[in-house]
Amino acid sequence: MIFFTSDLHFGHENCIRLCNRPFSSIEEMDETLIENWNHKVTGKDTVYILGDLIYRSQKPPEEYLRRLRGKKHLILGNHDRGWIRSCQTEQFFESVNNLLYVADGKRQYTLCHYPMMSWPHIMRCYMVFGHIHGNTDADYWPLIQANERMLNAGVDVNHFEPVTFEEMEANNLLHKGQSKSGLEVQP
Image: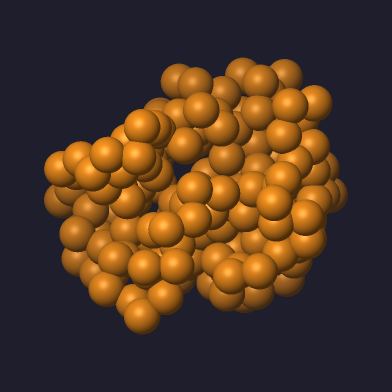
């Protein structure tokens, strides 16, 4: 199975307040994210992490990485540059990239930490991103909201767990205030 996730921010205490996450401590957030991950992902599954996996953690990255199941592919985010230098990435990741194009037999994806307003094969390829958490106040939000091929993989939109394409699509429709029929819904 293939899963997507982004912006876990392991070890980042301020993320709880800044993103209005429902956790009382960094320990609770980190443990919940790991439990949610391992509840869904097996060792045979593929997980695309679209950046900002760990940030400002007092723990070494290996303490998180060795606990996360699956064949992990990391697309670097703006907060990954620090910890990645001290980590033996080949021990934990199948690949590490800034941008990645993948296909699963049904769909094609452009994977990037940052939302791209234009990407290769825009008419048949999905743009899967992170970075913005659940933010709907940015000037570019109407562009993301209007484009059904732009999907936010961030945990803040996806119930703090890795998600399949179908789960991500459904969660994004709700977050964007839409339904499959195009009718507006209340998130």
